[in-house]
Image 1: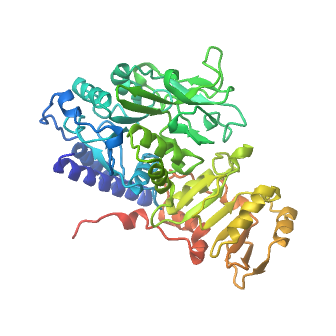
Image 2: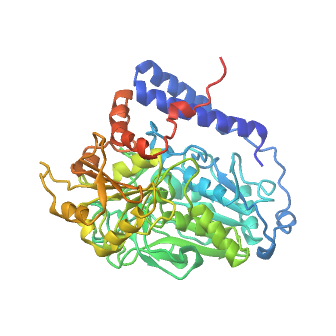
Image 3: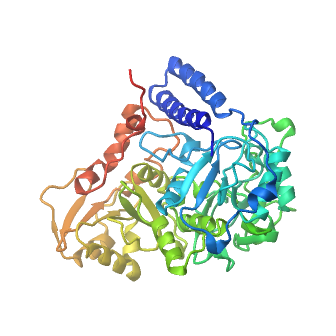
Length: 535
């Protein structure tokens, strides 16, 4: 367990970071930016308190007590590394939040484990035999060279932990971003796992947008971690060691070589390649997820931080991937029916957030919510996930109360039309259909008109001003038509990490404010969530 002082400093750092980001982005004044810099410096110092006084016990003596799989009982104990990585596990995507690292951190993923009854906490100091003695699973979020390195004693403790039955999920990323290869190199050498300097790329129809590194992964082994998966989304992820590969790009993929200038000099710590297939680059089905047995323990390497971040965890089967990786590495093997129940709880709707089904016809290789071009809806998908629990999938979501159809062209598909009808048969459900992205807006949409004529609906007496049509079904559900589909497009919606002032945020909120009248729960803004000290 972390020391009480460390836990307090971590909480202070989380609050300071949230306050600093909010003040800097909302007011954008020099004085407050200076204040944020000062506060962040304080928080950084607090978060790196040393724990060198912790005794280093004999590894085998401690780990000899590790439970066999059949003996593991709830709750599974998980520690997430907040010492070698910038990690916040309690800061969910929230209205007003624009910090890239918070939006793509593991808070939502950790929340899904807690929903399963697992005990999750942060590790705020070096890994030791003591800190690992009663742990089932550790998660190493994407590490960064500005954080402390892995010491020899830590690697020894981690290897003993794994050999005696512990589990680890290690999140890497593209190329050598943030110098994570250098930080992980010594430990991965002991694991006999190769780190790469690549970005995993693919060709259409396996790419979400014009960039070749936003990819739809559809090739999986029969390993338990990827069992039942149909699609996993990566946003500029990396390749992994082919020896333990369990998921790959399409055969048209390639490993885009990263650029590492001398001394790391350059404009970006991402060390991206050129997103183009060059002669000599590794090509074919590129491995992106790996799993390996280490003694009695298990390791999973995920090649993209964003795929389990607080926005894209809700895309395709990413959440299912995360939960199954956690179950396998933690050796959480109760009877099959209990395992399925645990998975159900992790996949279930989030507490205090409205579940929104953002229809994404992944089986047809048609992408809207994962699309980053001007006509795509990725920005709106991120925006919805700051307010609610929005999931982009072609799988029906049992407990969703909202369904958003991203294009009227999908209404012509018999399967899609049937799914919408089944959804509307339930009381108090709402469907939004977005019109074409064309400008200027066409006066009539024959597909929409034909589909609506088949529905048994009556126009609402009072229509929200943000929609072009509002109707009620015989079951008490609602259908809303937004003819100007481009109003929700990336062109008209800011990127999730774009700083916004209060006036900008108010304009953004108008897009969905009307939905609250029909049951969308309001999530408190970042400002409202901050625990301000008593004055």
